[in-house]
Image (cartoon, rainbow, N blue to C red; front, side):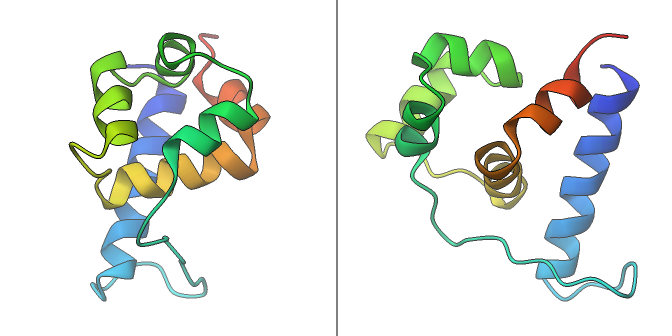
Amino acid sequence: MSNAGRRMLKSAKEALAYAQGKPGRAGFVVHIPRDIDVRSVRRRMGMSQATFAAHFGVSPRTVQDWEQGHRAPSGPARAFLTVIDREPEAVRRALQLG
């Protein structure tokens, strides 16, 4: 995993811990949605399930399961999907090999 990928994973874990009321960094408030419409996020980006999965390091099967309601994204996954939805270019830059 790239350094940027490790930083993003660490940040997602910190966000989840904060949302669960565990001690962490002071000075920020995290709002992780309870539900997220993965299909809408993906479609707004104009990507197929396979392309979305490849761009953001998620299994295509996981994307399918989320969209079909077989599984729900975990807290860190919801946080990551929220960032993808709001700042997709920042996520792409962070995940690029460099």
